[in-house]
Image 1 (tube, rainbow, N blue to C red):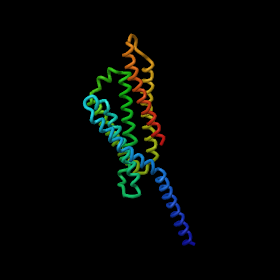
Image 2: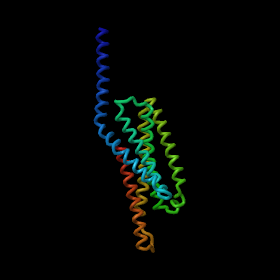
Image 3: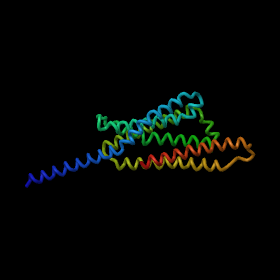
Image 4: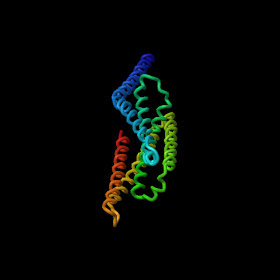
Length: 233
């Protein structure tokens, strides 16, 4: 009687782990094309963008510095996709997962937020923007953002090690709400500035200013939509 119970328990356990492994493999092969596209297109595209930005000197590099950091974050995302592709072929160190995920879920949207704030200041508060326009201020903000990203990686590793996934979901949700709130505020402020025009302006100056405002509006809009889509998946 005891033997049959043990056999039943063993059979049930093996079936459970077989079902779990089959589910994991099914998810892996379903997402395999997404990872492959991310690696094949992401690496060359982002390295090319970085090469174009680095080639610029002086104000060109300063103006695109946050875009440079976003491209680096995208390369980290491609590295995560590459580790997912090689998961069943090579033995990937377990510490790689929380580090990469922490950098992805915090670093990339944080730099996108900084870029939105930069465009908001350029349109709504041009005097403040000119005051903090030099490259050193962008470098300081980027260093703080990277420190926050690595801190998020450490936090995610602790959550992953102690299997506290519920807290991870709350943490990720709070981050997304904060980022989206900042981006939506910048988007609405730039849209309001776009509808207003200063009195006594020349037609040509007004057109140039409106062109800058429209460009800032579209950049913030695309960034916000990208953040929403990434948060959804």
